[in-house]
Amino acid sequence: MIKKQHSLKILRVDPLHPTHDLINEAALVIKNGGVIAFPTQHLYGLGADAFNADAVNSVFKIKRRPDDKPLLVLIDKHYDITLLVQQVPYAATRIMERFWPGAVTIVFKAKHILPTNLTAGTERIGVRMPEHPVALALTTAVRGPITATSANITGHSGCSLASEMDPLITDKLDLIIDVGALKGGIGSTVVDVTGDSPKILRQGAVSEKDIFDAVSQKKRNLR
Image (cartoon, rainbow, N blue to C red; front, side, top):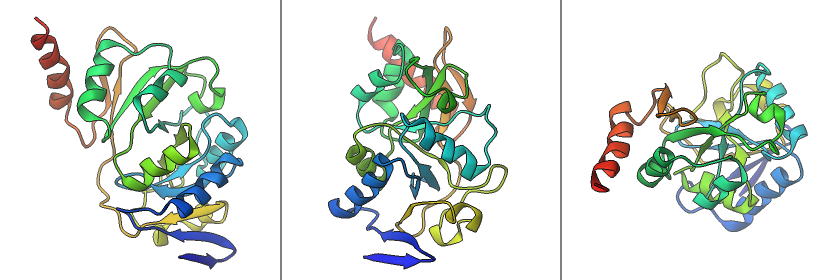
């Protein structure tokens, strides 16, 4: 069902069984350079084409996000990582095998073809494969990486209900995918694999112990 509210299109989507026509409509908005709100896992996020520098810039403006804070992106299959990163270290492969799709964001050395504003000039890119059926379906329909930063003004709390989204955000969006209430809580664990060993940048839904156990267990199995 499609509902209009203040000229903003809202697509009400089944969170477990999203229909192709609604997902494809939202994907087309992203492909055309728009910015949408959609469910990530715990909170609603802002989705835009990660390869479109103007769309990425719109996300920064909508969030009032500092230019030196990079955006993470979502992919729907492991192969897509090759579009984004210079190399996939051994530890990253083990983490992806264990926790993707799921609540782990992995920070890699970014390919130079990525928009500079996406990486905020850090030459690093955070990547995650989402577990939420709608987020995964949307990424698949776009056929490329999309941004997934939380749909809130920087410094404010994120929202688990689309209806509670700040008007300062919604007034600038092209579309919202509303699946009802999300579970809220903490976001993904962020792991940097650009150094000699993985480094936890943010503790989230997956514990540091589980991350390092996944890496070390595989190593033991190879002996």
